[in-house]
Image (cartoon, rainbow, N blue to C red; front, side, top):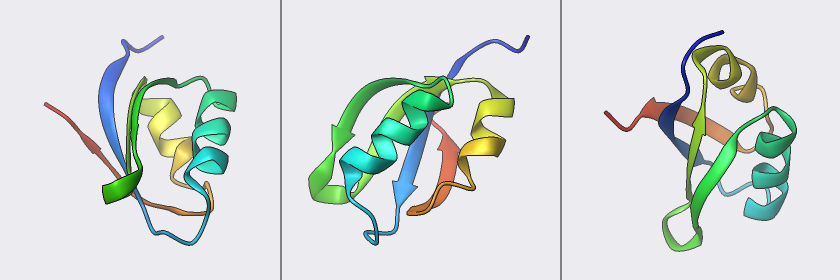
Amino acid sequence: MSAKQTWIILTSGDEPMQSISDQLKEKGFTIDSTLDAIGQIIAKGTEDMKDKAKNIKGVSDIISSQ
């Protein structure tokens, strides 16, 4: 299994942040913070988890925080 790293999840604003956060948790992410004002979620997960999370409605991009 890949090591977890920190990701910045950029949202489109089309879906509630809580809904996106809940779906990320279902995919195995650990949520560090939800930045509602700028539409970003900081979370830890693997590369595989990141690839699957790109299919969540309301997620526009996922970038590495490194």
